[in-house]
Amino acid sequence: MTAAIPSEPAAPTTASRRDPGSYRDPGGFVYRRDGVIFRQIDAPAIDGWEQFLASGLADRLIADGRLIRHDPASLQDAATPTARAVIRPEPIPFVSYPYEWTFGELQDAALLTLDVQLAALEAGWTLRDATAYNVQFRDGRPILIDSLSFAPHEEGAPWIAYRQFCEHFLAPLALMARRDVRLNRLLRADPDGIPLDLASTLLPWRTRLNLGLLSHLHLHARAQNRYAADDEAASTASGVRIDRQRLVGLIRNLRGTVAGLRWKPAGTEWSDYADHTSYGDAATASKTSIVRELLATTGAQTVWDLGANTGRYSRVAAEGGRRVLAFDIDPAAAERNYRQIRQEGRTDILPLVMDLANPSPGVGWASGERQSLVDRADADAVLGLALIHHLAISRNVPLWMLMDLFATLAEWAVIEFVPKDDPMVRHLLATREDVFPDYTLDGFRAAAMGRFTIVAERPIDESPRVLFLLRRR
Amino acid sequence: MPDPILAYIDPSSGSLIIQVLIASLIALPVFFRNQIARVTGLARRRGNQQTAVDDRRDPE
Image 1 (cartoon, rainbow over the protein chains, first blue to last red):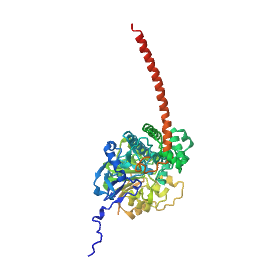
Image 2 (image 1 turned 60 degrees about the horizontal axis):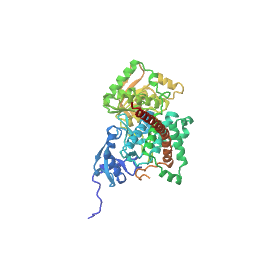
Image 3 (image 1 turned 30 degrees about the vertical axis):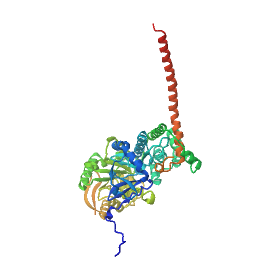
């Protein structure tokens, strides 16, 4: 009789998978089991957590939509025996990252963070971290997803997360507004935030005339360098006191600095594209009704609009209660889309800045902390309108590779073929050799059939363009 | 120092020190405004008191 063979775990499907980005905070971590997101709170954070729940602040922030809701869960659901409490946060439909947000989205996320910090201070609490990754977009608005960020504010203590806020929000926003909007891509290179000395170097000299940027960014960067790796400074810093009223003044000033950054979405690639297309009214109406009809055939609930521009067809795609991600390479087009969505109070469309020829990779520790775009694919259908000529001709991507990408992202694809005699393609080919013999209607059909069945093929009225409905094989 | 669970991220010495400096600078105009308000308020009160005394002196 062999007695000591350990038994197999009773239900292997209940294995917990720890979120690869949730490892910094010793207070707890996020994990998934059977598709459900849990969060466990360990001993170091349990007292603060229980006080936070009892404080009334948590309820207020949840009630006004600034903090993610959570349900209590059983300790039996814990990932490890160290758990002291387990919660089930409300899931976010699609996790996006700050380097994919428009200027306005990043600014709104920053303002949310500061407003939550002001509300927290008023109630005797403080945010102990302020990373941009603690914010997600849900129903069109930013929301704080890290319920464990709160700690009791110790009277006289400075804001621990001031540096992190400036590196994650202020530096990229200042660079986008005052240097070049494309610089938010630095957040991809530095997932821990843009170093302030780098931001200070890159910003135009005249930003020093802005008192907020001068103090929170330029002087802040200098102070970091001045006191870096200095034991004496460390002991000075540990004794630093600041009364709450002054701390609130500091945060309000920082808020004013962030809110004062402005960027006008003009002058980039395609923001005026809708006005420059070769479409007449009849063609637009025809395209709209075909897109509507083809998407209805798919039964899709979630649509990724690739090359969404300012979101005209994202709105068509969102009809019938579909959730839509509106991707565009142009920060100005995506920003205009976001501003309009915010103004209309829409909850169903999320604009994101994305270069499909170089989509977000896996970022951070072991390339796994922040998932690649392809790993986050959750669409039932992709919509590619006025898109493929940009990828196939401007970026030299063969049509079969485009089909591979569409088939990786979703079961259904609604794709517009834009032939070479279309004015937009003629324009793209005007300055270069035509090395695209396969870029024809037949070539498109052949490429599509490599991965899809062609379910429908519909010419657009008064236009040489053709809309295809494809279903993955 | 804050307790360790609160400070799991590196706050950076410079970032802590600069907060106090900036917060003091921001507080300066408020301080002066309050001082001016105090002085003018005092003067106004004194003026009012003077009037009150004058009133009392001249009851008829």
